[in-house]
Amino acid sequence: MEVIFIKDLKNQGKKGEIKTVKDGYGENFLIKNGYAILKNDQNMKKLKSEQAKKAKENEENKKNAEEIKKQLDKITIEFKVKTGVGDRVFGSISLKQIKEELNKKNISIDKKMIEITNPIASLGFHNVNINLYPGVIAKLKVHVIK
Image 1 (cartoon, rainbow, N blue to C red):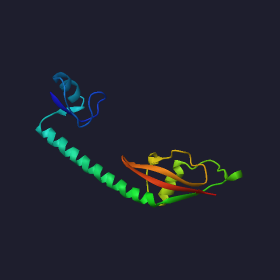
Image 2: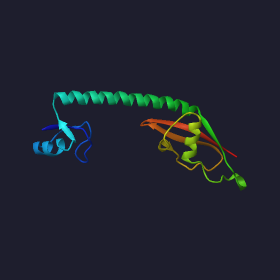
Image 3: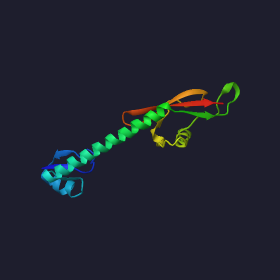
Image 4: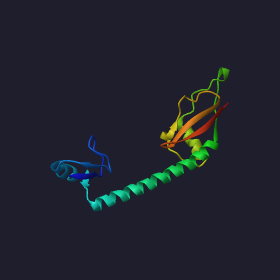
């Protein structure tokens, strides 16, 4: 029996995947519990339309991420910080601070997208990567001044 998975099932199959399973397992577990549906012409058409819709949505999301990347690559955000002896910075610039500065410039991104490799704890320019979409990474310049 061939089934189309409609939910992810650990070690069995992922959503949209077509697999051949034993009749009893397919009917009594997968279909009964809503993990899969029987593979037939009607369900295949439904699956293909869902995959086409998802591909179109992914393409649109990538296009939006590319536009945001162009904006972020041009921007430099500045932070004024207190310094001690020898221009040592107290503390460091956090993800939250970067997110708030971007919100002030009408660019809303999730804090989880911001990637700081080294703590921003010194004066000068620093580069911050922002993962907008798989394969679309913007480089934001952060300028720390006293």
